[in-house]
Length: 175
Image (cartoon, rainbow, N blue to C red; front, side, top):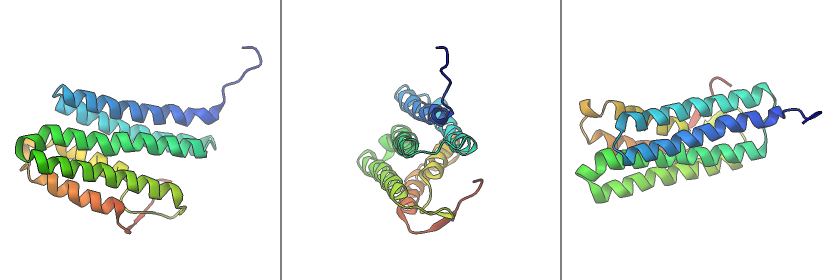
């Protein structure tokens, strides 16, 4: 170990992998019907996603590898996880067949959004609503599930799906 130093360029990857881990935990907790914990895992994934970018910029550790790992993690944490949670806690009780389609649409639009982000380079704005916002928003709605009519979820999910793949320019903040 003598003479070996820790390469700070891998530090953001730990936050990115924590994001993925929290997204994975959210899905597992959904299968155990732990709504609040599952939604909380997605919110923790949002935090980790925010931190990985900040750490990468601070240590000048941006890389193509990190960008790809981030997108793969995001599709799980903010595309698949919210889709699974909302299917389990809302759609399977009210609209099981339609709910499968709506959940699949959300996850697929999130994947398309991330793929488009990875091939476009624009430093001033995002094209379409970021998947982190869309997935975090859907998880946040779950915290208020008892107070919201169930119809809120398919409407919000379809709107968020289309906003992710839209051509709306969303300003980047906090960069």
